[in-house]
Picture 1 (cartoon, rainbow, N blue to C red):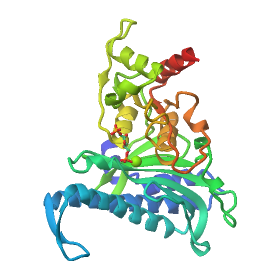
Picture 2 (picture 1 turned 90 degrees about the horizontal axis):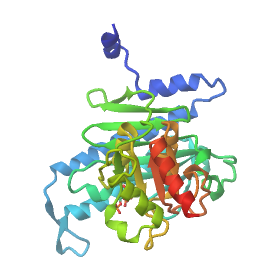
Picture 3 (picture 1 turned 90 degrees about the vertical axis):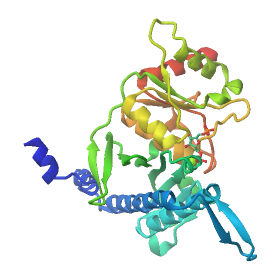
Picture 4 (picture 1 turned 180 degrees about the vertical axis):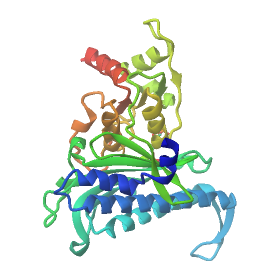
Length: 342
Ligand code: AHM
Ligand code: MG
C-alpha cells in the first residue's frame, strides 16, 4: 500500500544522493559526503534563525568600552549573517572535500589548506534575504558546486566558470517548513525537514515548473529606472494585449522564497538592471547561477537580458547580473522584447 510504503520506507536526502551515486560506478562517494556537510550546515543555521524568536526585541549589552549599549534586533541580524557564514565554512572545510569556498559574507575566496583539501569548490550565500529576519519572513541558504581541475595548484579560475559548468546547486528555505531543493544536473528534487527525525525527506520528486505562469515577481519600486524591455514586460503582465488575464504580483524580497514559489507555481522572477544599477543587485556566482541551474533543470529558463544566464563567464567572484527566470513561455516573451530592442 502506497501510504504505508511512504511511512515505512523513507527516501532521505542521503539515501537519494547515494542512489544517484550508484548510477556512476566511478564515483568515490565524495559528493555524498560534501552534500551531507551542506545539509548539516543548513540544519545548524535553521535553529539559529528560530532562536531569534525567543529573544527579546531589545537587549542591553555591554560593549568593549564597558558602556551600556542597546542592541536592537536589527543589529542582531547582522550577527546572524556572520554566524551562518561561520557555520557553513566550518561544515564545508571539515568535509575534507572542498578546495575553494566563495561566500557572500567574505570579500576574498577561501583556499582550503592542503591537508583538508578535496576536489570541490562551493559558492554560497549562507543567509540570503536577511532584511526579512526581523519580521519573520522566509530566508534561505543558496549554494552551487564546481569540481576543480587542479586541486594541487588551485586558482580563482576554478570558480570564475560559467554556471553551466556547475555540477550541482540548490537552496534551503527556512520558512513555515524547512525545504531543501537540489539539482545534480538530472532534474530537481525537493526535500522537507522532518524535525522529529532531523532528516530531509523527499517530498517533491522531479519538480517541473509550469510552462506558463500567472505570477510576476519584481521590486516595482525601481520602475522609474527600468530599461524599455523590462518596463514593457511588466506593463504586459498588468495589461495583457492578447486577451489573456493579467498576472498577479507576488514579491517577498527574499530570493529563495520568491524563486521557490516561482518553481512550484510558475511565472517569472526578475531582478533587472536599471539606470542606477546596470547590473541589478543579485550576485552571479551564488545567487544567479544556482537559481538559473535549478530553473533550467525544472524545464524553465534563465536570461540576463543579453544571454542565457548559465553562459555568463564571471570576471570577479562578487559580480552582479540582471536576471529574469521562470516559466519557459514567460521567459520567451522577455527574450523577444530584448531582441526587438536590438
Ligand atoms: P541580501 O543578500 O543582502 O539578503 O540581498 C539579496 C536579496 C534577495 O534575497 C532578494 O531577491 C533581493 O535582495 C531583494 O532586493 P530588493 O530589496 O532590492 O527588492
Ligand atoms: Mg544574498
